[in-house]
Amino acid sequence: MAGKISTGGGGKRDTQPVVDPNVIPFIDIMLVLLIIFMVTAPTPTVDVRVDLPPPNPVPQDMRGRNPTFVQIEDEGGRIFLYVDGEAANLDTLADTVLRHVAENNYALSPQRYYADALIFIRADHDAAYNDVVSVMSKLKEEGFAKVGIFAEQVS
Image (cartoon, rainbow, N blue to C red; front, side, top):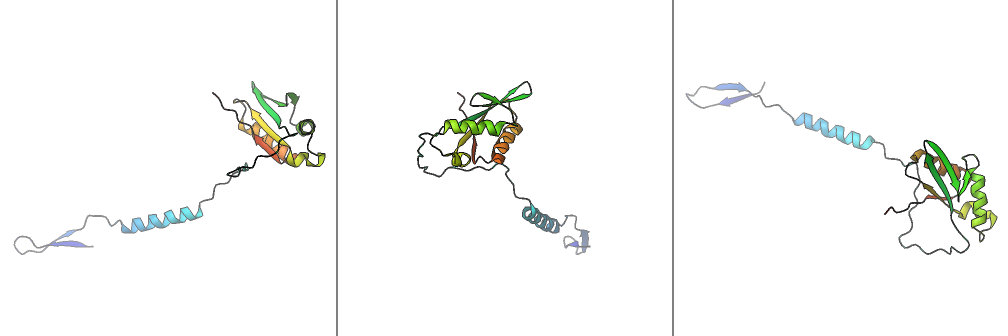
């Protein structure tokens, strides 16, 4: 055990135990554990893909191309889907959207409907996030490439 030696007083050597804890090993261990946890921590993953626009977007020719809107409404726990005002359900959603894409996009060839048609999803504030994502994933599974969320500014 370490001790202090004091030489004060009558020349007598007085030894006292050191009562201060040695915290250096504790700090070393904590720093090593911190580095281990920082290195092994999983990286955050995102399930919804977000394509950001380029910094200076080039205006696209929108003549003959109108977006198709899918409205999600929650009324008392029941979910209602509307494609450009026409009622639909999740099972027939892709067919209804494809019909409206053909009506709204007369400048597109039928081979380009899935790749170039713009589909926006609107949801009221009562609709659950799960419902919005399930509609988006259903349309993506059917092959529609440009599916986005339409946000309106509340004033």
